[in-house]
Length: 56
Image 1 (tube, rainbow, N blue to C red):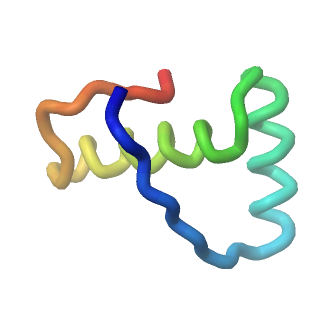
Image 2: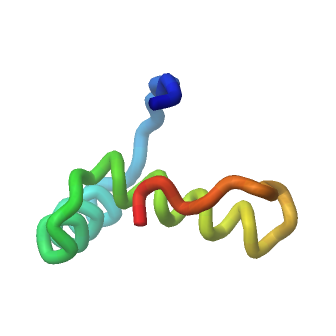
Protein backbone atom coordinates (compact mmCIF):
# COMPACT_ATOMS: atom_id res chain seq x y z
CA UNK A 1 0.00 0.00 0.00
CA UNK A 2 1.42 3.39 -0.95
CA UNK A 3 1.69 6.24 1.50
CA UNK A 4 -0.75 9.11 1.23
CA UNK A 5 0.15 12.75 1.64
CA UNK A 6 -1.97 15.22 3.61
CA UNK A 7 -3.32 18.31 1.89
CA UNK A 8 -5.18 21.06 3.70
CA UNK A 9 -7.16 23.89 2.15
CA UNK A 10 -10.13 26.12 2.87
CA UNK A 11 -13.40 25.97 0.95
CA UNK A 12 -16.73 27.76 1.12
CA UNK A 13 -19.29 26.37 3.55
CA UNK A 14 -21.80 25.42 0.83
CA UNK A 15 -19.16 23.42 -1.04
CA UNK A 16 -18.19 21.59 2.18
CA UNK A 17 -21.81 20.81 2.97
CA UNK A 18 -22.35 19.48 -0.56
CA UNK A 19 -19.18 17.35 -0.28
CA UNK A 20 -20.29 15.86 3.02
CA UNK A 21 -23.74 15.04 1.62
CA UNK A 22 -22.34 13.55 -1.61
CA UNK A 23 -19.75 11.48 0.25
CA UNK A 24 -22.35 10.13 2.65
CA UNK A 25 -24.70 9.19 -0.19
CA UNK A 26 -21.83 7.44 -2.01
CA UNK A 27 -20.69 5.66 1.19
CA UNK A 28 -17.27 7.36 1.08
CA UNK A 29 -15.29 9.68 3.27
CA UNK A 30 -15.06 13.30 2.19
CA UNK A 31 -11.34 12.77 1.66
CA UNK A 32 -11.97 9.81 -0.63
CA UNK A 33 -14.52 11.75 -2.68
CA UNK A 34 -12.23 14.75 -3.05
CA UNK A 35 -9.38 12.49 -4.19
CA UNK A 36 -11.68 10.81 -6.72
CA UNK A 37 -12.93 14.11 -8.15
CA UNK A 38 -9.43 15.60 -8.32
CA UNK A 39 -7.94 12.52 -9.97
CA UNK A 40 -10.69 12.44 -12.61
CA UNK A 41 -10.26 16.14 -13.39
CA UNK A 42 -6.47 15.81 -13.60
CA UNK A 43 -6.78 12.81 -15.95
CA UNK A 44 -9.35 14.54 -18.16
CA UNK A 45 -7.05 17.54 -18.52
CA UNK A 46 -3.90 15.53 -19.18
CA UNK A 47 -2.08 16.14 -15.89
CA UNK A 48 -2.30 12.62 -14.50
CA UNK A 49 -1.37 9.44 -16.34
CA UNK A 50 -0.92 5.72 -15.60
CA UNK A 51 -2.57 5.85 -12.17
CA UNK A 52 -5.96 4.25 -11.64
CA UNK A 53 -8.73 5.73 -9.51
CA UNK A 54 -7.70 4.54 -6.06
CA UNK A 55 -10.86 6.00 -4.56
CA UNK A 56 -13.23 4.34 -7.05
